[in-house]
Image (tube, rainbow, N blue to C red; front, side):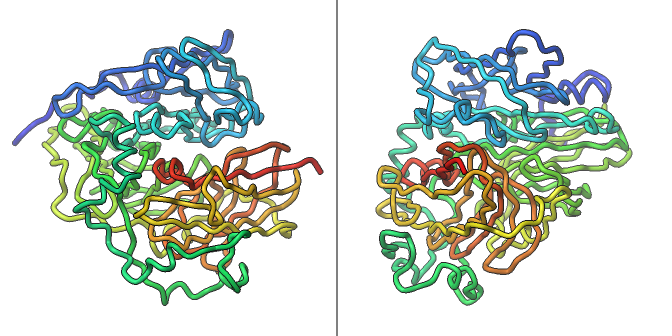
Length: 497
């Protein structure tokens, strides 16, 4: 039997392991917590790689806050380029949201800036809002614990996923957006849909002669459901900065319970999370509790988070794998009781994983434990998601960012926003400064999960409901970084009532 390095084993008890397996734990609150944007070196399959990172007060990636603790942070830019960090899943004052020049300028090299707001609890993360910097791994976990997390008899483990290339982020982005990365890749085709992905949506973004609400209720089951899944083959796929050649091995208690906090921080990759032999329950998405959903495979698009509760058997080693959708590559970590034998896990699976949630079965199965209050919509806009692989351009309402027309609302107004995807790729759509409830897919209503990022498959429509927040300019964009960089971004402009 082949064994792997025990470098990832934790030597403490289960209670201590629950603390050590979380990023940047800081219990006291005096001076602001130091968060450094810096460079670090990883070992990727025996090859040194220089990447960016966000290091907390203990020198480890990310931050963990206790219940009631404020997000009081001093962000220090120790890079040699300017940057700015977005607190994904949080609702800070707009001035602290972390989008360059909306409204604050980025931090120059050597500059610092203080942040202070009451954070939302749950599994969240933080990342640069400069696409090439997220490609360069300038991202980290942001865990805000609830009181019940401290009281629960379970160990918390974070699984932070990323895609990695040895080429520079600028080179990767250039290859993707120029079409070079497409040569020789099998994307699933979407045959016969070229005219639809490139259709002209006019000044308002609607397809000529069609009513938005009629389109939301279209029978999408009659349309092709194959998709372009991946537009770049990365060199490695990482879980907690490591590949399966030497994964993190987390020591767990026999017959114990684990809360696995999965964060898909990948720039351009959707993952399936597989628990293998272990029965599991999905108990939260994007930091918000859902009615427990049993299963052994759950999907997460870019920027989405999954809280998965796992009851362990009496002992052994249990791989938790992240499978790249539509491909054979995989990464992951191992939960292992003390003394358990850990076998080598190939980084390439025997068969390819399926596409993620094309029929939206997972999304439709989710139910929020604390849904938004019931209220009639006062404003129901639709945005059209469009674009194509060649030339590589992705749009909202037929416009790239430099030509964008904001989606507007009044503060306090109940909004039902429909994302209608007429392109060959799925889009994880993220709205800054708000959380929303998923209320319909393809015109079929239900009371779904509370989220901040929703995946919209090809040729599908998803409707979300929320109350417009602070009067300010909030970003609305696809969280696939090459899509964002090539135009799929607009703003949600909220005005005072």
